[in-house]
Structures are given as C-alpha cells and as structure tokens.
Image 1 (cartoon, helix red, strand yellow):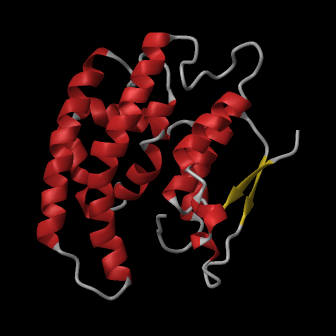
Image 2 (spheres, rainbow, N blue to C red; image 1 turned 135 degrees about the vertical axis):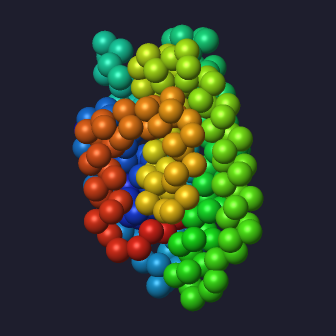
Length: 207
C-alpha cells in the first residue's frame, strides 16, 4: 500500500488531527508542502478536503482485519454514537472558544495588532462553562467514550496543544478530571510525536 499523502504542515491543527490518526493506526504517510505564495491552499482541490472526514476515512481504511485500533467504535452502536456526539461538541462548542483565544492572542499579535482582551476573557469564560460539562462527564469514565481512547478524545489535541502554551491555560486547573484526561492524552507516544512536529516549525497557524 502506497503511503498516504498529507497536504500542508503539521503546524496547522486540522492537519495535525489527521496525522495523529495516521500515527495511531501505524500507517505510512508523507507530508506535501503547499505553496502559500501561489495561494495554492485556496484552490478548489485543496478546499474540497475536509480534515474531520479524512480522519474518519483514515481510521476505517487502515484498521486491521482483526479489529485493531477501533477509534470510531465501529460495530458498537452506543459507542459510535457517543464518538459522533463528542465530535460535535468539540467542533461546535469546544474548538470555537479555544480558537477565538488563539486568534486574538497569537494571530492578531503576529499581524502587528493589539489583542482584544475583553474578547479573550469572554471566550475563556465560555470555555470554562464547556469544561464544567466535560469535568462532570469524565467523573464516570477515563476518556470521553469509556475507558479507552477514541477519535472524540484525539480531536481535541491540536487546538488544546496550542492553547496550553498561552497564558490562559490555567482555566483547566479548576477542572481536575479534565486536567487528568488531558495529561493522559498528551502522554500517548503518537500525540507526543505529532506535538513535536507542530512545534518544530516557527509560528503557530491554523487553517
């Protein structure tokens, strides 16, 4: 089987999510740079690619015949429904608040602007409310979908990795179960490898 091709760099959170899935299933892959100066990343072929759909595709394509790493809980109706539910929570509730902070703190600053601290504070407060729900849920389970990791957990990694490098990361300290969940997640060798790839490039960018 030929190696999977990844377009753009691991420094982008959407790319990092797919990379961690490839690492989890042990698939070979190569990263192909995109020419930003030529605005190649805005071309129709590239815009047609959806990282969340690609992550699911990767986990199904490279799953071994004996079951292997079942990060989508395929074959388990309740488990797969929970994976879908938490992926929706991450996409609609969690990621937007974290991304809003990232934009103000990192992107606005990088462009020479002044971060809107009021907007940051509002986003952090929204995140606090979301984390309260996570903390209660994690009180009865090790990961979001039971006692083993799933895509629902891994999808939180890229944006949270960058958030934890910002001054607002202390918001997690009020939620011990969330903090424990995160620390266990980033202790995974696959996550550590992709995190190192994200940090190896200068700057922090997002698609």
